[in-house]
Length: 398
Image 1 (cartoon, rainbow, N blue to C red):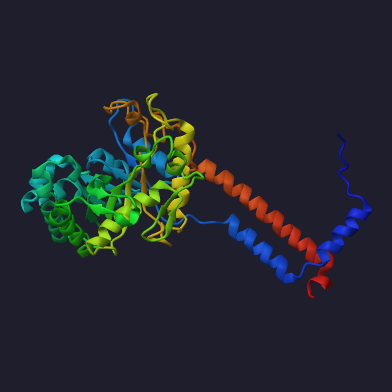
Image 2: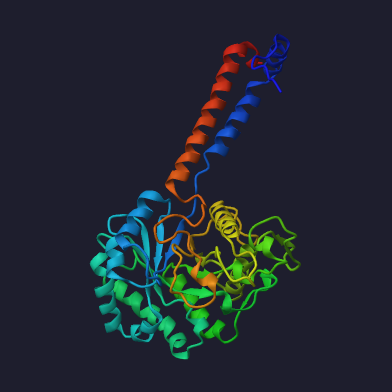
């Protein structure tokens, strides 16, 4: 089929007449809408969990340089306080969260041990590495280890006292991540409750500590582990029938919002609805066992891409509207030595050679290409606007 690239005189005349009928306010509105759409700035923070249960990962210094120069990631969570890791992130400005491993928690209740841990693991790096948070353990309550659970809050309090003594308490905050296993009820979201016994004896004093130190409550929600063939679209932020909460008359379009609001409801029940919630882990595997649903690179990319857009959009959740969430994607790499089912070794965004398993828009080359397209589109819109003014100046003033 042949197309004539030159418009007919009649078509040109009609187009000019149509353009002349636009008022200045109408065209200006269109231009402003176009500009605002093209220049959306990301709010909130996207981080990654940097796990190292593998035998094929690049050196930490190379990883830190890669994150700084090649990605838009501005936060990293480490699962220990490795000197090599902390040196690798020196002078990058990337916000680093370090972790006290679970086995050290009972010792940390002793102020002398806490001071020495801080002196050995944190203080040598504070001038060069942007350490912003210390996590005391990981999913401690879910271990069901009575000694660890009983020591958790005292360990956090003692470590905070050590931070105060070192004049680091305003710069570095203390928290601890939890799995959704701390909830006895999560459906409907407004009925979220902490497990009986842990609610008053552990979580209430923990929340009091977080409020007093202006620290966040950290949670590891994984819609992947809560999904089924029937709820896969709901878990992946796809169009679905969603969930309706009859207690609040609120509708949920994705599982993550429901999980977060269940945690919020449990906190509110104890009187702590004012504490910030941080998503310390969430992700989706790109490979799994044949019995699992939705374990492929396409689903993983869709979840993490939609996750990033959602938590930085400012939309919030039905019970926590108009807010962003500091979020850490799990994980940075596929970790080939992790035990368990196949999916556990395939949550990574990148392979060991730093090539992406799939694209979710965190590589700077991707962002730069999108920005270039947006800039070109903006210039095109601006050019059209100037041409309209030039050709129809008198009519535009009406």
